[in-house]
Length: 235
Image 1 (cartoon, rainbow, N blue to C red):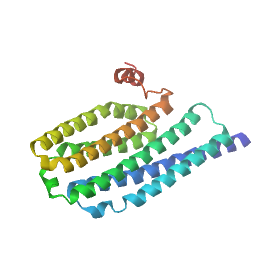
Image 2: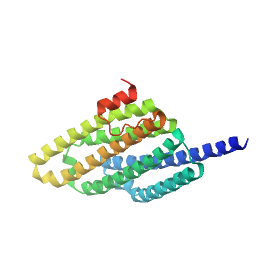
Image 3: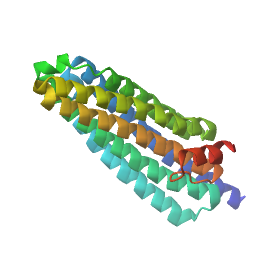
Image 4: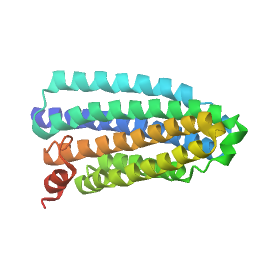
């Protein structure tokens, strides 16, 4: 009976840590939604809370780190439980970095919003990649909540699509800047925004890779894409 009681308390602690991570993920999703909508509409009121949210994210990461360390010290978990705790630390770090990228997008959006030339540049690919990155992050968090390695594996594969959209957007922006030197300054801001969006996709992929690690015990972070497909799908 005592062993069952201790096991129940341990499960509760694991669930609490995971819940905190998903709360952090929800805050990050809200940040991204605001900055991407501001990028479309240039409504700067949408990004006023981004700085405050980033400070909250920093605190949440520290709280998760402390709680995970305490759980490991008290319970000395083994196998899958230890993988879950270590993956939670990595996911919290990735979410905090997504928050950093959202802050960078907000900063650049403020700059482009006051430049009349911003309306002249076609940033369709940047907007599309932003939507893709948002969806990837949401799917990665859902995969973490369900510990769904199959869904996580698909996210890893989908990272190539957002990279392709990023490259297409860069080519279009560079071409526009060559054709009209007056758009260079604003074009550079858009390039940095595009890079931040691409990085958000990378962090979503990192979270998905962590899910695969927890469920299957396979670390696929540094594998070649084809090899990762073999490790994940067994083909």
